[in-house]
Amino acid sequence: MDINQLRCFMTVAEELHFGRAAQRLEMMPASLSRFIRLLEDDLGVRLLNRSTRNVSLTVEGAEFFEEAGLVIARFDALAVRFKAGKKIGRRTVRIGAIDSAARGLLPQLLNMFVQAHPEADIHLTEDKTINLIPRLKSGWLDIIFIRPPENLDSKLAVKFITRETCVLAVPAGHPLAVRTSVSVADFREEAMIVPERRTRPHSHDLTMNVFRNAGLTPQIAQFAEEKQTILSFVAAGLGLAIVPASFRNMNSEGVTYIQLIMDEKIKGLPLSMAWHKGSNDPNVVALLTIFSRRREELVAGL
Image (cartoon, rainbow, N blue to C red; front, side, top):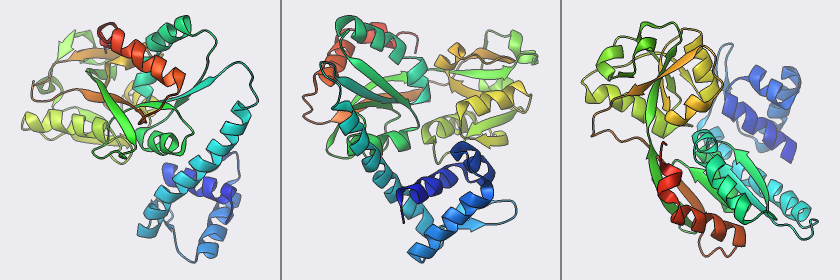
């Protein structure tokens, strides 16, 4: 078992599709399949269920997925630490962020940070919460902006930022596209594109709860993982989607965003930041200080 086999497995486990995983890794599907089989033979356990149409994780595969992610994160962190050590006179702050934070909060926050600390180098990684937390714990990242999980490692500090508002994404030619605002009653019979709960539990649950709170059941046309994929499906007319308001800043041709009126019982998508407790990294301290001092300005419009 080597690190390349782990990377191959992680990519297949994330995509649950050999073709897409092979494309991400720039490999032939047959070579990727061989890598996975060698890994399974080495471990003596089946990690993936395969059929002509579907790929899924076995029970052992799901457990291995979590552990393999930590191993890869530690491996990458080792390389990052030594490479960063070659820089003289400049210190890198390694930031991880979910997609909506990378588009909504961070541009303004980092602009403030750079003005106060022009000597700092910024390395930004955009990924899902489930991938960012292991990278923070392993030391590969210094601070992350995430959807807070139910349970977080006691070694990590977490600070609530805000609840992001959401909008309804509809195809540009949809009858609702001329509206300035809508409620769930206006699109209750529409097909919906819903995020996968495994990787985006908060976004998935928000969509489901918007309907359930009104005594309705969403008509799900498609589950999708990436926000850009969701918006592409919307543009293609496959359904509507509830997305963070910050996605209005994306270049999404063929998609119109409408203000979504939600019941007060349903709160928006939570956004928090997390870092190592007791961290004395000057860049992390500076980011936290800037946010605390200018919080109202930073969260306005999110």
